Length: 205
Image 1: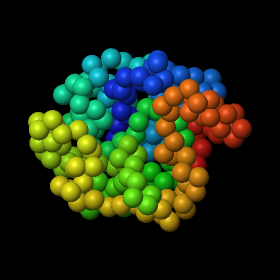
Image 2 (image 1 turned 120 degrees about the vertical axis):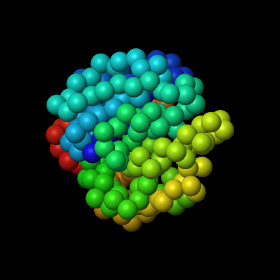
Image 3 (image 1 turned 180 degrees about the vertical axis):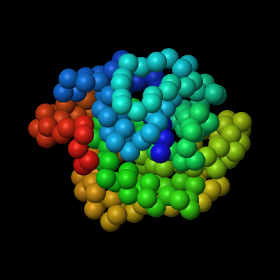
Image 4 (image 1 turned 90 degrees about the vertical axis):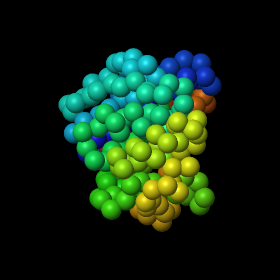
């Protein structure tokens, strides 16, 4: 399984690079890498211009540039899938330090007959915590060439499995997998959570 980390955003609300913010002694992107490395044989980091971000892992890490610069997360998914050596890939943002490996593992176990496996809580989808097939490449390319950037437009074009709230709650009842850092308050909350719970990167929570 490949994992794709989206790190091409401008971090405008935080005012500095999200990926390099420190939580409990390591960068935010290192938190994400450590979680995904438990499930992955390859990690691809998609950035705006292919600029490397310092991080390390026991599995292979490759950095790719957004093929259509400036078109948001959808192009990061596309660029990562193009570079992936696997038929399917986990996709996550670089600003989600508390990914539930157990929930992701469950999603990878049910993904074999679907193009996308995505959590849905009430009517809210989590497209940056999902599993995508390379079958999505042609539909995504068509959307990008029409300058369509909304990821949810893809879901009417491919075979989607929605992971519902009762399934999510079995693995992540607090829904911390979907907590992402956009501003200083979010960063401080993440630091407080990490300090209180003292999670280790090798644990499969």
